[in-house]
Length: 191
Image 1 (spheres, rainbow, N blue to C red):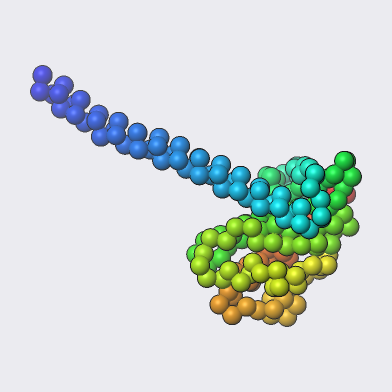
Image 2 (cartoon, rainbow, N blue to C red):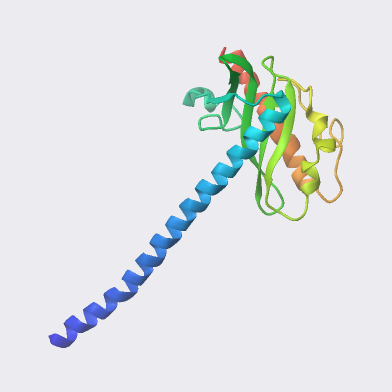
């Protein structure tokens, strides 16, 4: 009987070590998530400052009803859509999203005027070595002025990029999806 108790105690030890590793992993993962979220928001703020030539502004999260969110092609039910305001005056809107690259995802924003024309699009965080060309303003400026309801064809309306085909197609689709989703919000009287 004494031998069985000792064996039972020894079996608990791996679980304690595993639980400690799991707790450390979760803590570090949350800390990393918070740091990346903070970094992402800093990059979004910098993009807004540059595009709207403004320093003191608010990014007010726009909550979209779950039923309306189901009608859209991009996620609008979380902290993805912001009204950009300065002194309660609407400057425009910011959509914050993610799109797939070859092996990972990248974070991007689409900044729009109050009448829903693209003022600027920007790749905020790109996580791969290949395909970074989609982050160049020279390529991204093709989206400027496009408005809700327009659809852009990759290789037709938007220049293709050799060596970044997947990411460039993905960014083009992302911008199309944002414009289509905002059209739904416009039709529903939300924007």
